[in-house]
Length: 323
Length: 265
Image (cartoon, rainbow over all chains, first blue to last red; front, top):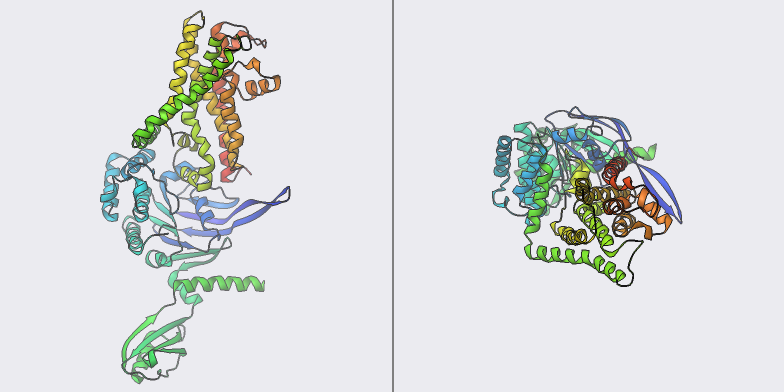
């Protein structure tokens, strides 16, 4: 679906000193390579200014790459912008493609004409989105009066009316409340699995990734730092896991081999045992623990996805320093 | 399949304006009055002199009316280009690039304001008055020219708008510069061009083809000689100049958008 090889994009930035204007070349995307297969759901994350939006703009045909090879849905985005537009859907969290003063339904009608969707297909697709996203009440409301959550659901419906093979979402959950976020994620997961729509989304909310994207790509300074299943990345950069046990009676932490650190809380009622995933499994550890103490409850805690990404950045930073 | 999307997009704009009915009526009236402010200037001028550049009051009013209608129509569609800096800054232009349509037509229909019809109505009234008072030896060809002139003028003005607003892709705040040409040529064309100094005349007549909006067609209609010595057939060439201007504008816009997307630099 997406084929990217050594993609680069430079910008010229004016730096004024006195009356003279000098131009400095800034590389926003610096040799990015990846593939996305049809039906995948990929999370594309990185800090502000990492090159996420620039990549998205090149994939959607808005910006033309400085160099590199790029094919999306079988076409070259920079040369066949309009063909591409018919085949992909794009949602920008921070800019609307709806008509501000018009009822939501009118925007959908206009998009139907723009994308030349047959009346029958349009009806079916709109009905499906309206029902799954709960838009019944808002169809006749002018877009300017919608809440952010309602508007985002409208944006996503708008992007799906022409049944795109690929849906690109730039910060789709930004600023939404928890309930709205959850509803969107559920819907996106559904169209990904049921309709097979390929998803590529950028986000700052890592719960989006956890819920939606089996595959994660991390970008910083225009380069891909990591690309793979979330679980693998987690195992690779954060070798430690944690077992939390609640005892029936307060007491000292059990002393078992394989535990690398212990932190205790609540006067010895709760203990956090850190262990290496490569050396011990949670099951082995639990068997040993219950032999020593009487356990009321326990849980295995995986490192937060934030930690994973922070570690990835750290690792890159260390490499840069050594270089 | 005939392209029905642009009429639909315009219809959508009009519907949303109609939701503010009272302010719409007031706006319309304001626009009629605005168009007539310039008229007052001409009338005051003629209360002191009998002729301007060799033309009578009614003849100048005819030029003023042609220019007014042409500018009004152009403003209706190309006027939206004044929003281009906002579009670029807010990223709305990217949304236009995401759609399977051309960017220029999308902008032109993005904000058609019906109240601008006020200008056209005001100028149309003056045209009717002027045509009734000047002496024209009517032929079918002249009737056609009378109808074609405001339309060709609208295309010429729109082209000027497109070309000068394209500057905003390089300098986002280039609007002031662009307006000097768009609104400037709007005011320029209301008077016979021979009242201006030579350099300005050449710039506005041939580089920015403003003189073809009202001045030369009026000469042809009135059957008068160009005081500047151009042959009489020049007055019939406005539609041709309009086509030429539109082609140039199309190329400039393409070049500018290409620059924006990153291949132009």
